[in-house]
Length: 99
Image (cartoon, rainbow, N blue to C red; front, side, top):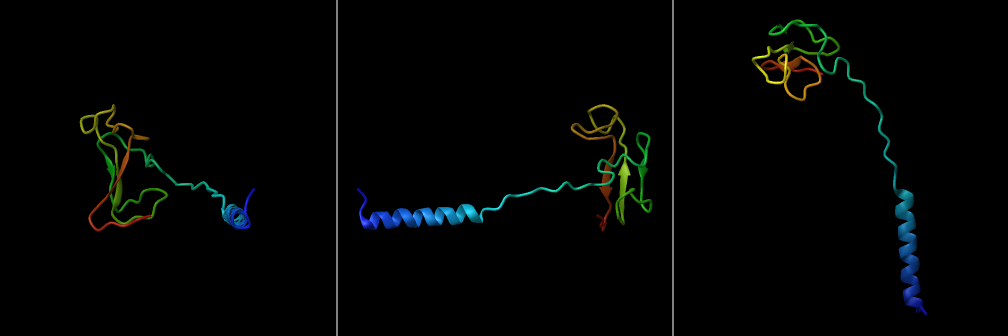
């Protein structure tokens, strides 16, 4: 049989646990759309780039550009770095900023 003191501890624990569970919030993720996420626009032939001042479509940039490397510059076929989503990369020049 529980003593009064032990009973109060059980009740306190139950109240604290109920409040903690009641205060817990469920996290909700919202999808984020990223325009031109793999920099495949504009189309570029191997070894060419889309150098500034030409903007990367869908991005606000100052000294950014896109580049399509040749097969000799990266291993992985057609100049694509291993694990890449597409054939092109984006780069940032000195003092560049963008979003």
